[in-house]
Image (tube, rainbow, N blue to C red; front, side, top):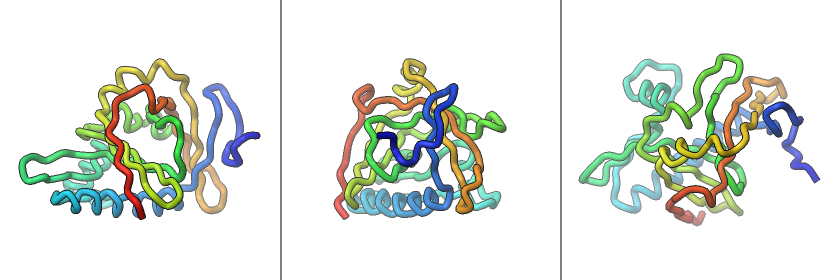
Length: 179
């Protein structure tokens, strides 16, 4: 039986629906989980969030896909955060963030040192940490799919294109955060 989020099938494969406002709320919860994880390890974190301003930190987030700077007392590491509402057997390697404008996705343009991909399972979080370059090396092996994001009224805001890459296809570090 098809997933209730599936809208249609097209040239690039199955199109899934997402809600922009639900995504923002999920990201906000995910930021708090990541911050707690690093604070418990004794690290300081600077979280960047784009809200239309013109600060240097917002420019790093918007243009370079850097959401967090982690300082462990020895070095700084930049992270790109990605979150899903439920577990999937793959991650969505975004190649086009807006199909109308042709804007490159995080998979191609991110300058973060690592990606932290969060999956929520029964109220707990699983954090998958991985180096982006390994996915850049293999994403073309997997078919492209499009995803559709809608607003609260059900109107399409934009379509995104990317390649689902199986979790078994790349090296990652997994951390479980119990809530």
